[in-house]
Amino acid sequence: MNITCNGKLIDLRTPKIMGILNLTPNSFFDGGQHNSIDAALAQTEKMITEGATFIDVGGASSKPGVEEIPTDEELKRVLPVIEKISQTFPDIFISIDTYRSEVAHQAVAAGAKLVNDISAGNMDTAMLKTVGKLGVPYIAMHMQGTPQTMQNNPSYEDILVAVRSFFSEKIKAAHAAGINDVIIDPGFGFGKTIAHNFALLKNIHSLKIDGVPLLVGVSRKSMIYKTLGTDASHALNGTTALNAVALQQGAHILRVHDVKEAQETVQLITTLDASYPINP
Image 1 (cartoon, rainbow, N blue to C red):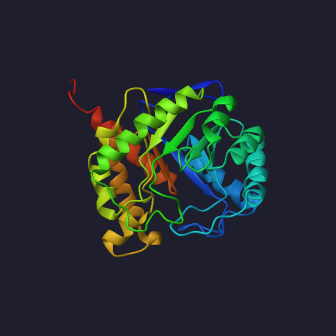
Image 2: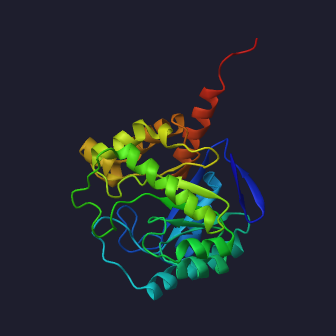
Image 3: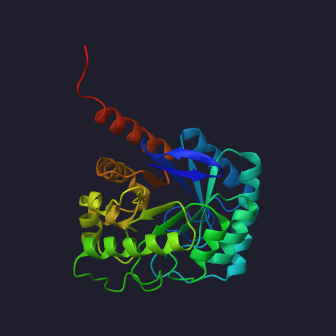
């Protein structure tokens, strides 16, 4: 279970951490905190020190009901930061979080090594072909609808069947477009009720497809804080609990705001998995 990124083989048998770097003023948790290059670099250095393998850079919020921004604005936010991170931390693997093929293309030229697409190509028909030409790993996420519509009464006959079927088709399409390394993300909170989210997490092992890594991103999301009757700023403990469940269900990458806590969770769960039998 591995991917090739920037000519290097990344072994995902030990789960890895993807740190979230939001360059938006309106993200649901940390919007506006890392918008300057200096702030973005400081946060990147912190996440790398705490154990992140990937840094996921996003310039367009995808929270429910958010207004779509122009492509030029997204590029203006992400390109200078990606260039600076790439120069300052040349060994880190930068992911560009975008559903636009033009942003993906320019971000990879600036130093990004993966493309993370919340729409799995559904919002830009040129995305799969573009990523295939770029020769980088591709994270395909499941989402019902768009960020503007996804939480308008989402419904499924069977959430697990729907998501697995979606990925079966998307993986085939990605390979046909020349993408060698595909990573799948069930899309917690994207076109799903709280019940849908927990049903997915409880049965996430059933989404595993041979040779395809699984990314889980539940960090500080509403499935946690609404269940606990709190808010995103108080959802770290809940995030850690659900990350532990995801790891035990077979997740290969955790996408998080809080890298240190996620890395400690990986260390504890991998130690637990290796703890028996104990040789005297």
